[in-house]
Amino acid sequence: MTPFAVIAAGFVLTLAAMLAVEIAARRRTGPRPRPMGEALHAALLHPITRWLTLAGWLWLGFHFLAR
Image 1 (cartoon, helix red, strand yellow):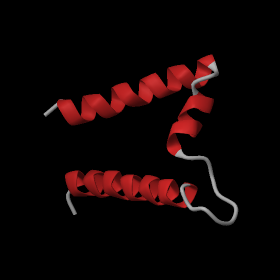
Image 2 (image 1 turned 90 degrees about the horizontal axis):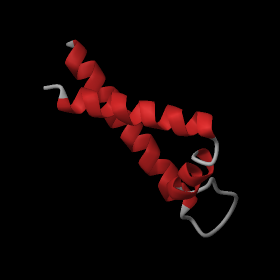
Image 3 (image 1 turned 30 degrees about the vertical axis):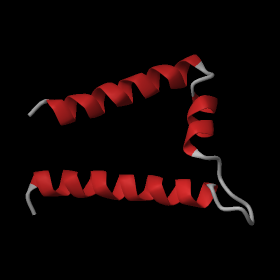
């Protein structure tokens, strides 16, 4: 496999995992995790996680817009 294929597969797996967690959070029965919006809101309450989130967005944007 080429490095591009490995990176693309990693992004696809990450997106699939995020979608699975979001669907599990929206179930009506049983214990469930927080939906993505609530988790992001809780993370952005702290300055360190706010900076880490910004750095993650910058890294992701650079890798998608660099080509």
